[in-house]
Length: 222
Image (cartoon, rainbow, N blue to C red):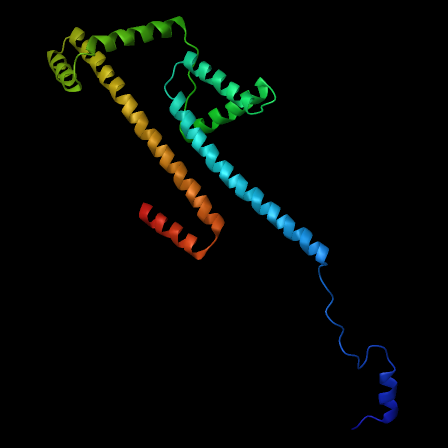
């Protein structure tokens, strides 16, 4: 049934009825847009700088491990003193502040590389070190192959004196092999850190291509 003229007139008098919808209100003012965009820029720069700093820190840790691994306590403390001086040169407020940077670095390579701090040498330790040096000098003219043959001959004799000498030769062979083994381990650690850093970069990129690279890398390592 058609509405009467009176009803239509009454509805027209109610505010908001039959009016065109108002234009959608502006959510952000131009000033707010600029402020938030600048905040996004600042966040991006901070995150990017942090990623660069993390990579640099990882590289420094590997270099520090190469320097301090296997050193004596005396040399370790000399390295620490030079490190603290370097921190002071770059703006560390005090030796204490620089020493805290050193402690954090040593703790990191202790976790990531298995580094163990050398202990202060006792008189007994010094005598042992001197004895090892004498043993090394005793065998320095012989090749690894010659030492291995001599060890086998001594073990074949079987008497206590020969067995002790064979053990000394075994220790000398291990001493010679240690730098090579340590270098190989340091190389593994460096590769691992580079893989982690690259994975973080790809994860941060968040692109399909980055995801594909991570998947293929994981498959290759499986």
